[in-house]
Image (cartoon, rainbow, N blue to C red; front, side):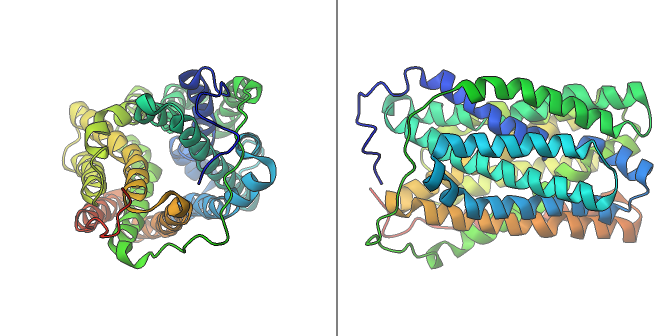
Length: 400
């Protein structure tokens, strides 16, 4: 697919690194704060509102359903309004969801807020990723670095929420979850200002009706691996703060743990770049998921601060490198006209995993009375996903 309005050399994006850093704020809001900050307030919401672990977990399931809806609607939205406006739309929805999360602790309205949060995050990630790829396409010497800059967004949001939420909860005490959501909304509004002032003239890519349909049968192992990753990682991200708090971790321990996950994510594009550049098979996907799985296991076998720190760094680096690895896999193994369908299929597999993961692990926790059991299942899903992904071979019809 080409962008006829973006001939090489045209100064449509004068400062690509700065532009992509600003675009990363969309996923910092939608994912890093909208999706993942929930884990920081989950213990207080569960105790203050009398939720079971299954109910608490289902809120991230609903968020994942919203994400899958957004993944389906992202391409039509971009075709109608353009990639940049689609990112703005997703960011606006994400901010509204943050504000709505502070309004009511009743299950139904909060679930609606989580649904909106997932939809907005998907618009921001899918359309922002396409926009980032277009920018990188016309800066080939720095393409990998530029794409990496966009994908640090979730890590930025995780770090922001980690530096904020635990201390607000400690300062204002039980029942102060709504203050955290209010603070997240205020921070999101600040981050959104430069995003809404950004202007990048990129038309949405259009699929030619004569283009060949991509075959997904050869990448079944990859799809299964990504499903297991979705089921395993979201359980860890949903319940680990509750696990650390139950183990006696105070606000400083929770903040440090969460910020280290964010730091691992922020540095992951550069950490994994040499391997991603060779990502024709599923080995890189397997390695990234495996590193996240090792991080999850470490948190379960010891309770020292250093072990938690290493767990967070490994987990953050692994989970936020996976999306880079799968994008490289699609680029290496399919022609450009088929990238959108292949990545879309992967996103659906991932979303289904996100949907079932929190509910299953929450139900396990309610049944056993222990978060350890649920997090063990989470780690096992990640390690199995790593093995399955590593078995994926390059396609014989790989694109040059």
